[in-house]
Image (cartoon, rainbow, N blue to C red):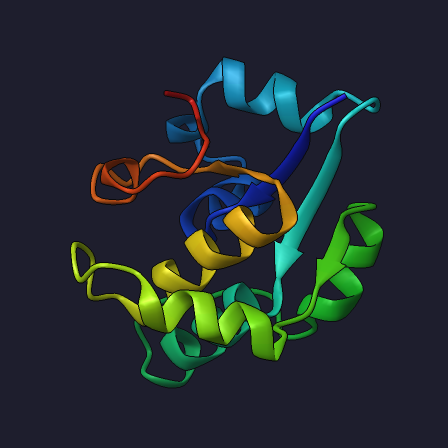
Length: 126
């Protein structure tokens, strides 16, 4: 069993069935023995991008996460503390939060972001 945390672009690609997701990632997410998490940071980032007109996405992320049978990962004070102490390799606050959450919770961060891979965090695909 793997415990996965989806990066925002991976979550969007999953919802839109984007071929950029790749077969290995798709199979890993679909594997019912794995636990798949979506962070509150992801829904926050999506909502901001929707409000700015940068993306279109379903309005009720909470319901979508439930329908997909993903687990919800809230942001804790501890997550914020870890994110704030990360080296400034990556300046995106949402990605920094996801890195912090993955590290704190022992999750594998599913991402294609090359900057995230510079941190000491387990990623898939690597």
